Length: 366
Image (cartoon, rainbow, N blue to C red; front, side, top):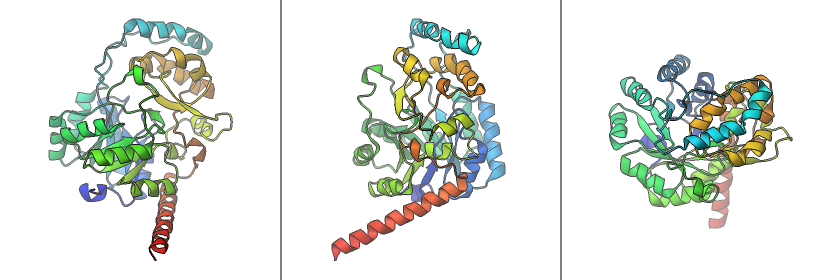
């Protein structure tokens, strides 16, 4: 199994990747702080214009000379039922009235490519060290063009079959996302018929993918401590990707209400829901999820656009019960440390866990 650092000519000092969290959390200050501390920081290209993404790339470059990555959302090509979206609009009418806003009236059916082609063109013209993809696998030609430009490519996968597709297409590595992960599940095919039944836990999934492909694995899903990183490396991963762990950092662009909610005893569990975007995403269970989750259609990103105003209004009001509180299953372990310090703590925990494992192996061998 090829290590990520060897394959990518040394992307980072530590096998610690800061997950690209769309919506503002993965802002340039967070990315740069992680990179400067020896981790691999990632900008989230999703939900931004191509120029907005490029401006953030320039900000990161002004803050660090270290390697960093940019994540893109793949265009969504599945059929979306307009009637289902309109029915959900009716379901949300009470929310709009409560926050005294109007739900998006423009035609949101068809707004499904997230500016992918324009963003890819920018990344080919002015390459960054790493580009990852979520919600699908790019065409072989796109991956080959990025490789020619000197960019290392990573495809997010949630199954061994998706990993095989990424390998066939020519990806340099896969980001293996377990069901524990916060935010959106990066499945290549959004099928509501298998919601909650096909997702696999991270350790089991790493083992499946490791036997299915010969690509380096970045393991993601509920990782909050260095000892977990050690376990994933022992299982065959080259690095671990952490999102929720960095969400609470002061450099994170997440709303303060969101950060506080991660360890608030009021929020006792997470759940996969389509309530906020129309795609399964793991969030802290709040009033919005309980009241609207059962009625949300499989309509991404149309539902995302539909609920955008509601989420912004809830955040402006400081109402955690109406916000999309994306979080992984390990959210109660969040530490509000500066990003650089968190990387250092995770690296120290990793080294301690690996040392302990080595001592145990030596004792058992003697």
